[in-house]
Image 1 (cartoon, rainbow, N blue to C red):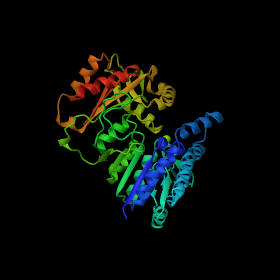
Image 2: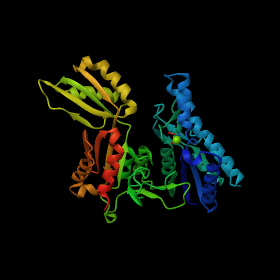
Image 3: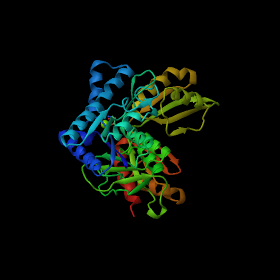
Image 4: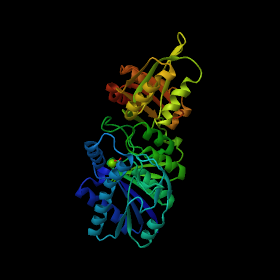
Length: 402
Ligand code: ASP
Ligand code: MG
């Protein structure tokens, strides 16, 4: 029997009506003669609410207890969905991440899946039941609950699809696919029929909210074709798969905006070998991802090191750099969170010239100042003032519309 994995995000299971809506989608898939494994997220803003509750108790919660708390949101969803399926006469069983066999590394809050023991899921599917698995959670070697990081349920779904060699992996969300820009910002953004793993990975990493980037990484690694679609609007969505089709002829697949960015500047560090190594290895030890890096040319034996980090890590980065400033010999550390990164992504830019110029022209005409630039083979990112980000997205999108 074909196996279909279906993942439903928080907005898709927000309340009673949405849960029954999901139950009908799942039951229809099951009744059409498929085995169905479902992954659910916590309802609506539950995860944020749980974070807030912890904040009412302490500003320094134990990472272990935080994961115990956060993993409870998904358990509510899975039980309610199993009950709703029962109401529809569809046999279903819910499983926590650990019942479902998710083994992770030790890192609380951002755990990585090490292994998925599929025995239990497979045996439930054999009994011709819908299996509902709580997303974003597993168990580490200490038998402690871990969570996979925000948006981690996508990754749980892809892992199940990969391990059980599912015939399809459908990611249901509240938009009906991947668009060339956020349709709330750019009303004439177009839905993509197909996008490659690499392009999707860049878009997901650069701020498009549809898919979690680690889920795309995993899908690429195991060749799991993904279908992104709406749980509310039954139209065809976007397929994410290997390779890309020149015939599609779209140079740019998307314009993304990321406001979770901060610029860190370390001023007047000595212009000597090993300085970048010292700074960035320190940040690496704290698992802080550095993205765009600029280094001013030396003057008077000194230089400035300027780079971006996620805004959510800016306070920690600031603190540890200040603590080590004496070691580097720098004068000052400045942090600016009023910035945004706007990026264009498209594999087509590898074989076309003038893409960067077109983007910069659009920014120039919109009177947006570019503070930093970074590029890869299939993306160009600019760092600009946060207040100008929406205007920049609209202008760039318009420039690439044929
Ligand atoms: N509930 C978790 C979150 O909000 C995981 C997920 O939704 O994928 O981040
Ligand atoms: Mg969520």
